[in-house]
Image (cartoon, rainbow, N blue to C red; front, side, top):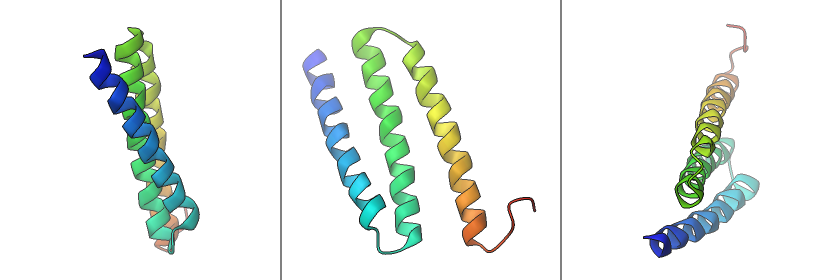
Length: 88
């Protein structure tokens, strides 16, 4: 079981680098936004795997906080790209 979790952790870390490439080199802003969303999901997955491997469940709380902030940031960026002000 631990070997499978270690492999999953390394795969997710590698996928994070692909997302960072998409965030930096994305041809359009929506491509970069999708890269940021996927990066956030991968970070939460990494937090869960680390929590299971180390038996410290408070790390899952960090992942939940990360995904909430990612969701708020995505909504804010979508509203900005839609041409609306942030206080509307």
